[in-house]
Length: 534
Image (cartoon, rainbow, N blue to C red; front, top):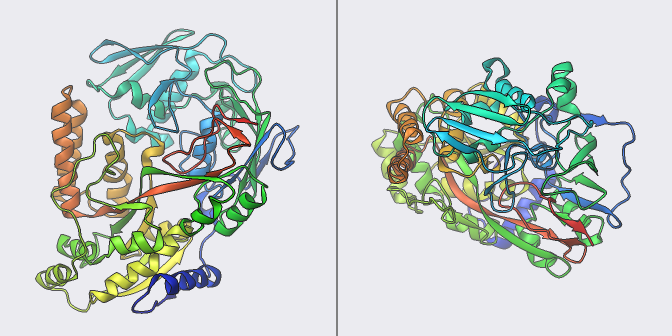
């Protein structure tokens, strides 16, 4: 753990010097082992890392392996991105624009009636062990997600799904509990796994995944690298165009930039905002607008954070525009609703938090709170570290004495999950699982987060949010769904138990002459589907 105070005022030049010192001196707590997942796994015949060039794609990834690869439970940024290449669903999201497209299915699932859909598997699809992908594998993949004993993260996205059955070896039928118009795209959260291999040893499968995607995993070492090889028998729409890939896991931002500048890698994600201009001299650098946000979450079971006026006060106290300009080189948008303005279903919330310290003091006084002291947990992600001193500066200026506690994500969430915290400032981006409003809202406002992390699900407003989302899910009318989502948007913006401070742009750098067909993605991770070394 590290607690430190920052100067009362921080201009840009002093801020950059200060945040660099923080990054070098901090003694961050926790280990990735707390998150589970393999420390290292290697298949026989593993490829070696020969560096960039040739028929290999080499990349720099900003996150270590924090979970395993089993798509039923994997939530870490890096394994989720790896799984885009290893697994397929009947339908997958295009990582570049998050649109849904057929993958193992020959077409988008067809509607039979209001509560029944069918999908047909493509002929000749096989898993990386050479076995055929069958309808039984699809049914197995669905059922293990729906089984409460498995505690799958994906189950929360499928509350409408009653059952799946194999009509024949290549046809699957889905029965819904109620009509759900978003089913054809939402089924993308189910990645199809080989029943025989998973049943034989589920833990081994988590460490050494076997899918039907264009790349197969060769080896993975938690804080070092992931190696993939082309799956030659893949017969889908997006075959591998490189013989192999090596993803170097470079959580240190300067190490990623150095690797890109030296040519040791051909692409990096999460370019530090301060390095964007410099990298543009040698690389292509682009930012993608995203749902990815920095959010503020309160322990609503702890006084005085159970009072929405206190939560609102801390949002009004934030000088978000200064944070964006100073720490992010303008590469973000202050939240004016739950969704980012570039989202097709964006709606401005009835409450928008501009910088208003006077309003913050009024709200604290109305709540009967004086001389408020807070300990703000933040994660050690590089861009969050850059922002943390300015968060403290904003709150201190509004009379809130703030202590920063910066630590590894696993350690910080361990505190959150035991209730040992005041508030958390952290990044979040469920759009890796889907981009529709229902999914994006359910991630943070239904289930685990409100029940066990910010303790809001038992409140009247918390229950109302769930009810409204359920009503929207059951509605076949687009306008009615939109109106219900707008109500949720307004409630969470007013109550702010967990709410975005800003939506960031994600800068990616790559060597355009070395990678043909590459595009940055609006989520964490890199996609090399359809990309070839040149």
